Each structure stands twice: as C-alpha cells, then as structure tokens.
Length: 299
Length: 317
Image 1 (cartoon, chains in turn blue, red):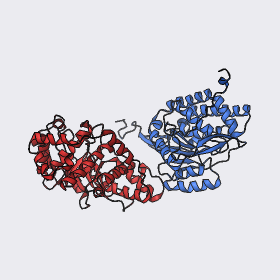
Image 2 (cartoon, each protein chain N blue to C red):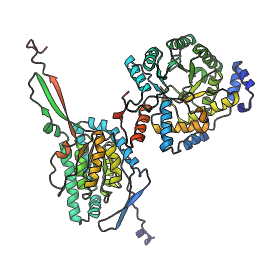
Image 3 (cartoon, helix red, strand yellow):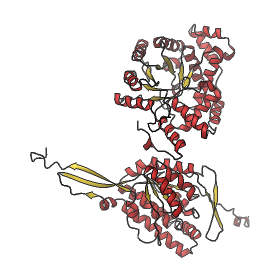
Image 4 (cartoon, chains in turn orange, purple):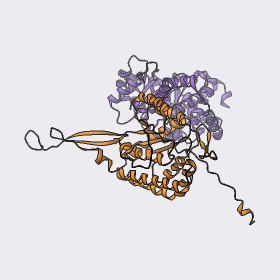
C-alpha cells in the first residue's frame, strides 16, 4: 500500500469554453493542441466554430440589459471581486503564463501581478469615467444640457496574440468596466490563461454572459462575429493586418464600431482611458431649468 | 380498438353521455415514455440548407400572429396586421403569415389591417381563456366575432366539465359553437397544460373532432405548460387516425411556448412524420405564436445574406 500512494493517477484538466456563465465544449466537438513556447504539449483546447460564436453573442446580448443597467458602483465592486479571485489563483496563472509565453517564474509572476493590478485599476474606473467624459455643457438657453457616456452594447474582442494574459485583461476589462458585454477570442496559440480566467469570472459575481471566452482559430471565429448584425463593436487587437482589413470590411455592414489594432510594445505601461472611451457612446439630454419662464417664474 | 371500429359506430358514440364516455375511455392508453422518446428522437433531425429555407418559409406561412393582451390597442392590432401582411419589409419574397389572432372586439380593426392580402383574421371566443361562462354568453361571444367578420374562431373547451367526466356537456358545447360559427372555421383549444394526462389529451382530441372541430389546438398560451412536442405529436396521431377512420381531415395548431425557428422546424418534422405531408400546409397546420415570427425572419435573413441577424433588424412587437 505504501508504494501505491505515490502512483496517484494524474488528473488532467479539461479546458472548456466559457459561454453564458457555463462551461460548454465546442458545439463542433473539435479540439486543438496547445503547446508551450518550446512546442511541448500542454493541453487540448476547444476549437470553437461559428455556432459557438453565435451562441456567445446570444448570451452576451441577454446579459447586456442587466450589466449595463447595474450601478457603476456595483460593477466596480464585482470587478474588484474578480481581482480578489485572481489573487487566490495566482500560482496557477503564474504557471500557465510562464508556459504560454516562455517566461521564468519570477518574470511570469511579475506579469500576473501587473494583470491583477490592471484589473483593479479598471475596477476603480467604473464610477469615475462618467465624470471624466461626461458632464454639463454650457448652452445658450434656459436648459441643463447633460452628456453622459453609455455602453455601446455587445463587443467582440480579439485578444492580443502575444500577451496571453496581461494583454487579454488589458483589452477585456475596459470593455466590461463601462457596462458593455463581451465575446472574447483568446490568443490562438496560448488560450489557456484566458480559459482559466473564465473559471475566475464564474466564481466572482460577474453575471453569466457578460464575458464569454472562445478559443480556437482567430480568423475562423472572428469572421462571423465581424459580420454579425447583433454585435455592436469589435476590437481587432489580436488580428494581423490582412485579417483586420477583412474584418473591418465585414463589420461595415451594420456600422459596427471598429477599434483597429494598435501596436503595443509594453502591455504593462499605464493604458489611459482610450480603450474605455472606444466603446462608449455619448448621450446628451436637454432639460428645462424651470427658472426662467416668460413670466420670470418657474411655473 | 377504435382504429378498427366502423365509421357508422362513430355516429352512435355521441348519442348519450355513457356511450361517449365508453368510447373515450376505450381509446388505447398513451405510452408516455414512448411518446416523449418518439417526439425527442424526431427532434434530432438535422434540417439544413435548402430544406431549412423551405421549412422556414413554410413555418412563416403557418404562423397565426397573435396578440391576446388586456392592453391591446387598435394601434397595436394594426401594427400586427401590417406585420402579418409583410413580415419582412426589406424582402418582398417573404410569405405572409396565415392569420392574425385577436380578441373579438379587435376583429374589425384587424380585418381592415389585413384587407385584400389573403391573411385571415382569427378571433378567440367563448370566454377565452378560462372558458368559465354560461353557454349563451359563449355563443353570443362567438356570434359577435363572426358578425365582425372573423374568418376563424378559436374556442376553449370547458376543462372543468371535461375533468369532471361530463364529456357530453363538452361535446354539446363544441357542437353548439360549431353551429354558431356557420361557415367560419372552428379551432378547439384543449388547454393541454390543464388536462393533466396524455390519456386526457387523446380523449379531448377525439371529443373535439367528433363534435366537428376544423382544428384542434393545444393551448391558450396563458398557462405554465403550453405546446410541447409530445402533446402535439399525440394530437397529430389523433387527426391521422381520425382521417383514416372517417375520411375527415382536421388541422392541428400548437400554441404558446414556440419561440425559435429550431423549435418550429422540429414541429414540422413531427407533422411530416406523423400525420404526413398532407398536413404540411397552412390550411391544416398552424403555429400560435408572436415572438416566433421574429426568429424565423432573422433565420431567413441569415440564409439570404450569410451573416447572423439581430433583433435590431426585425420589428419590436
């Protein structure tokens, strides 16, 4: 007996998609091999089809009302909770990021720390962005004129290919912080940190469907998303030049907002608010002040 | 076995309460597990490409576009009528729906809205949805709708009497409504969700057909359980057997709870495999639905353009 205790069977982890708060396999039943930076096999990841993309959009649309309607304060709390959960799984992410990007333990740890800090940073922005990009406008009349930022809707996000975790969070967190819901296509060659992030989101009060994570061939999944009439915006961070052009053409059909890929040398640099404002629309309302009627009185 | 009984025998079964009861209780019992398994297995058929395009157009042409709310306004009924006539204004090849289905007081408005299009106006009647009113009141309700110009009447049966075993009362009520309808087609709603058992659904189907229903319809859409593949399959078997025995073809209308194209296509498979292709026509099969039409239109747009459509591209009802 004592010899046997050392021969414990390995428990392999089945990586799955994260769609609508659940962990389905790909509808197509396909998987593909994920290797580390040296080519050693790590795991099989689901290879999503266009139908998985369609299902993810349905889930994201369903979640949009609740998430965009939640108070900014509440969204901030929930996103901070995500950071707490990430902290609890820090060792796992250090290992996965190290394997995916060929980093040593200390460098991978630095990346994971920067990622968690990034998440906290965006969690803090949820109830502050309105003051920065909205506000009262001076107008020539007896009106209050107020502008406030509104989320665009369902955003398809092509996560950066090289930075599998910090890059992913740097493009995902600004989308959902402002009340959008997201369909994320993980880095094609290193999707494992993104799929594990789905497990974190599932256990941190983020309503199902707010974030949907798909893994697979980026070009295959992105094409139907770019053409999808019920996707309001697309972030092409993970597309190369040729693919980005194709997707931008497909996205023109329903006037999607398109964020073109921008070269990022260092994902750990302070990001600024551009990625949040890229997926915000400004709503302006006019409201009588009620103080300057014809008679000089309010009523 | 009723399927072997001579047609003449069916004339006698309605002669008294006891013969009717004996006949209905003599119907073979329903194998619930087998029925559900059969319905589920037919639901796994894969319908793609041209077959799917055909099925979607067929399903659109079978929709009874329904609004049965206390808050129905003439404007809403007109909007619904316009949608029934031209479901997708961006694509003129889209077929019209079969009918619009409204409350009796809205029939006049609905008739004007669909005038000249071939779309029919169906009206619920007989104290819909509960059916808890005296027979003269129900008949007045029916005559009112017919006088207003309804092409079809959707009546509800008295579930209380049915469940109490008073089949003759239910029979006579349907027969009286049938008479009040004149040439107007009559759909009989059983409210299958309130009949408790599959055996009861089978009995109600035969009862309705014996009493002269042109259509048998699952439910009102006002209770928790509405049309399911299993109870629709059961009713399809009943109309098939009824035609085999009497030569009279009766239509089927599942209503309530059918919201996606996928569901609708599953029902069409049931129709084809159970009753047969004779029923694949909006004269013999209908969907009572409202949100289903939008999903069918989105699927149609997907087939036409190759890209997934969204709710921004169909009307909000």
